[in-house]
Image 1 (cartoon, one colour):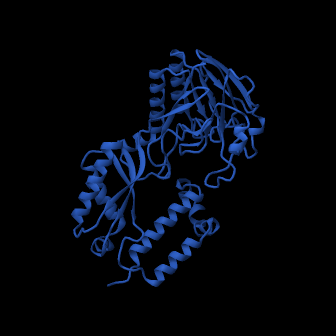
Image 2 (cartoon, rainbow, N blue to C red):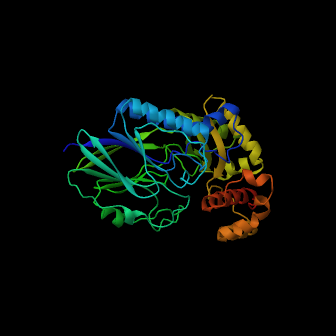
Image 3 (cartoon, one colour):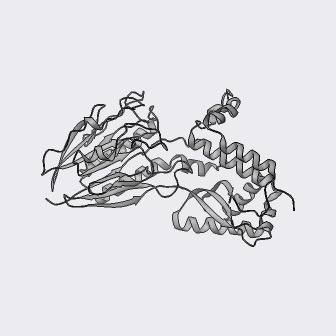
Length: 405
């Protein structure tokens, strides 16, 4: 037996609304709104050019259960291009695009094999052997029970066995837990490869056999930083070769700007401009958080009396003058950057905020989230939102409640 070659992609989230992005120019907003669709087109372009044996897409093809018409149309066109190139596609639907949603249906071409709500198997024939692919689609949004017990073990030694599973490892409290599993449970099935979805950070949980999260193909907020894409996989009975292929159109990231020794604001603005230009030349268009680091007392003094909105506007103008799309989404200051100490009252407030749990935050934000008009523009209160709010609040307190020299 030789090796087979396939693409492992997941979490396309076509049609993501990108809530929380404010202040973008019209062209910038359109580029961001279309970024998941354009990243998908790059996935299709690569697959058509490289002609692997097949393509796997492991859940959350669409961002919502309603599956927008525009996103479905783009997906259908991509599948037709793969059909015309003779490339089979195996897909599953996840918690975001589960089968119980309501949407205007598009008929996909015959090269697309979609899993139903029950665990089942799809068999493909390739030049180097048969491939048995096992998986399921979410029948409803919340699949809390383990599904792994329904996956049958590998039976035919001469065939390649691949498991597709959109879910999370037991004990992973950083993400919503769906279709939980353990590595040991996966290994007992004796599959040659596990193609995972749901977690947006690419990672290899185990080697030989490989248990792999490919991550999403386009970041959607600063918590999904860096390049995003998919894996080009060469699989034999002896080894697995993974090649990461970046396709994200816009990067979300953090750029550090050193303010050490700076005494004038024009120095700070020039440092911001240079940092953004260097990032753009290496990674392309981006939405970033600028973090000011290495500030001594003189540099810290530059920022003390400047309203943050005015500072943000001025930095954006300096960066945009270069013509690059590097949008400054937020500002951060190194926690111990300033030599000036925080007032005792400021330290008390910071200590109290750090001690808050999610219920405390919900109580504080209750009136805001109950507002009939404003609440629809707010993200759901989850651990990530709380972390961002806490970080922003502490930064403002540190800047505004220092002890005068």
